[in-house]
Image (cartoon, rainbow, N blue to C red; front, side, top):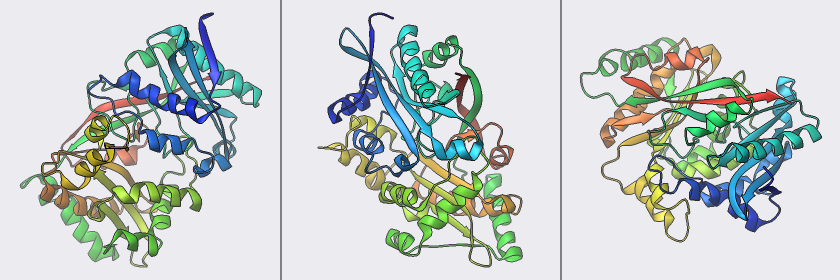
Length: 383
């Protein structure tokens, strides 16, 4: 490893190189969706990312003969560590060429930094919070990635495990076909169950006249409040505060078609379940070469608003409060989204990563035609 130089990112110019390395490594790969430059630059801007209030981070680049051959972010989420009574350092945004020495140099840099900070365990890939990219792809390398998930080459998990890292948890993703006329979901399950729970429990779907109304009526906090409660006991979850919620609202509201925001309320008007979908931006980001400017925004705008033959719908979030998981609330989510997806001609929806151990989340797809097409994992070891 004598010819590998590890350096810390200290300038905005170096940060751009850190971000763009992902694009350079994957620019010829038809399945990878690279980091969006402007978005990732803001993620690592201490003034713009509120997670820096409770997180520490250090970014590292690996070079060989002056050429960048790898990158990694070291992160300590103090809020999550306090919640879970742990002393973990996370590694995230990790990319490297197919070289064991490069992978070792990057991870050893995170390990050293973590030990210096008093940590006793390393795990990743994870971000600042669950709203960031997490989980190394272990299966599904021939499937198109999404803007909110990690794509990596098959050699990543192989090399990481050679360095003594072991799988700590896993996620699965599904391709869910949009039901057409005559499908069981259309006739029996979601629509009839949805009607039943509305009559029996007084559930209702909240409709919005505009995206401005979503923010004005406080539904950003209500929707993400459901996420906080629904995900509270899931692996490594870090609670979102109001400041973070507002940042995520700024990021995703402009991408949202309000027809694909499903908000279920109980008879008292409390939000009990949510579903958030957007058109897939994967091909658009590839065409934009992972940059919004000067012309990349057009590809994204076209995918969002002008695509007459959309194919894939990305399910960003699905959450149901624990006490309502067996009371049909999720049926109302799908009974709203399925007709809209049918109307717009989508062929399938891509689920967000779901923990393998989350049986309640896994069970909600049983009445739809679907298959697991991707798997990912977090790897860790003691320091």
